[in-house]
Image (tube, rainbow, N blue to C red; front, side):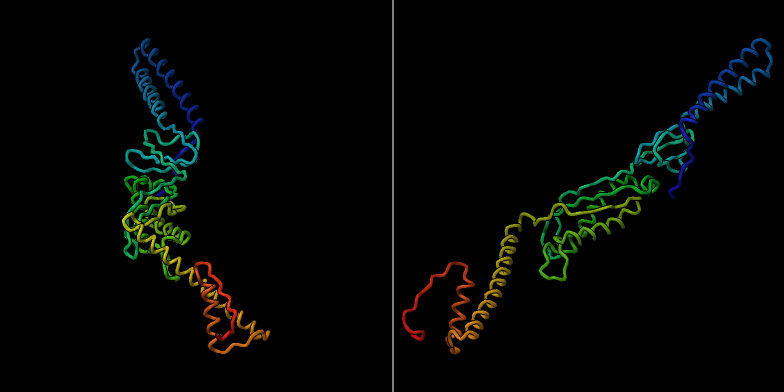
Amino acid sequence: MLRKAFRINGFAALAVIVVAVLAFGAAALAALVAYSDSRSLVWLLLAGLAALALIAAILALTGLTVVDPNEARVVQFFGRYVGSVSEPGFHFVVPLSVRRAITLRVRNFETQRLKVNDADGNPVEIAAVVVYRVVDSYQAAFAVDDYEEYVETQSEAAVRHLATTHPYDAHDADRTSLRDGALVSEELTEELTERTETAGVEVIEARITHLAYAPEIAQAMLVRQQAAQVVAARQRIVEGAVGMVGLALDGLSEQGIVELDGERRATMVSNLLTVLCADRATQPVVNVGSLYS
């Protein structure tokens, strides 16, 4: 469980340690001089105590540590977790402890181009970029072996799962495809957040950076996409042509320009649709005879 480690200002602690080293060193030296003069065991005992205090003061120097901005230090004392220090600066923590640096900076990772079958069984190539940061230094240090490797592995697993649950291109309006950037990114971010929570990592954003059909079917799928676009375009053209023909016939009838029976009306409709829906320029034919000839 994440908790704050014991710490005090490093500069104040360093000043105290320096004064203690000088004081205990002078005391030990004075006691040794007095012992050499008097040969009294009391002075020898005092010299020993001063020497022990001097050693303790020197060992206290191991408690000094520097924490950089956007970094945390996980403090362990003989294998026991005693807390984390995340405030930048010069600090004094438990002496003889091990401090492990965990960066809290925002980081990004781009997966390799993965070859996966989509929901329709088509092989696709997909890659994504993941933006994340550590929010719990305790879990990042002790919940997993290597949180960076853990994020990379889970990112690739999430991208694979996303690709297998959605088609590359949805032909139905109620289906989400891999090409729906905002929806797919939100879904990928949510799944990665759940996967990396154990490691104390927060996923800020996850987006697909590469999406394409596999080379072996890319040409066939390109033809299919082109055919679908042609069909959609022709459908729009036909819808517009029908509307224009209706407007033309209604205008002729309202203004009384010409009266057409059913057969000639059908002929005019056919001619107008041929002109409006043709994919090439039409050649007009001038009829110099009767309308019925």
